[in-house]
Image (cartoon, rainbow, N blue to C red; front, top):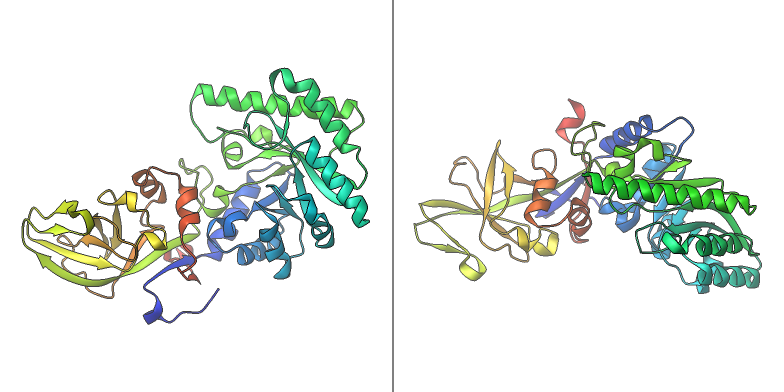
Length: 384
């Protein structure tokens, strides 16, 4: 992470290693003894900085890391991260040599992909470590094993596991609604788990053995602790979000900050920003903040959210611009240019901001743009 002076920071993201390590300890404590811990660091560790997060997890004794693509895995290796890394997404078999050379584990999503990796590994003269993906109802990647496709899917999976050049270490599936409440979502999740374990048993009857079986994402860790199997792979929970009931006492690891740039007083009837979507109904003390949608604050939040400063909250007013947005400071008379403003973090619930943007917390964390510097900092709450 780059060092920035106070005057350079128009907006910035504070990252708390202390909170991340606290979350790792809390999550591990919720797992059965012997269950491996995989930290999901794809998408630049959900905006927190993949290399820095990976090194913290490595030091904390995590067993595995997961990324989405080869570029993300190679970034970790180039930074000196040596622990096992699993690519959850697609990689062309043309890069099998790079996977083997850098000791990267690859997810295999179907029979054709397995055959391509097998052929490429043999041509390279090495062995590729893989985890087989099973589609139990996500309808995305994986050997399709639902309904009438069960027998064929198991047969294809078993055959793929016998291909030369592949070291089949693990098998996994992904839940579609494990984080969603309601009886129907619970029924669907439990059916996915039933199918997954049935696939494993059927494959074992054909002589296949998986050292690592994993399906526990963040939602399952919270709501279905019995699904732990051999490894859990928390994503959003790792960064302090997703535990809306506070079961695990997690702490947010990112605090998105900006500064109050200017303050002016508007007379009643004055309109604000592009599209004139806010009109002052009273004499209004208006502040301009140094953050906009190019920094990751969604324009869809316009007139639907509030930020924290000076011990209070300031409602956002008018359309959010590319580099700036405006807030109502009428009820915060002490606020002045240069004051720090929290967009989300310990004082502003990311879930509320996500609801205003009609999205999920994952998207807002990942949306914090590259031009926003990440700064290591201990939040006040860390030391309380």
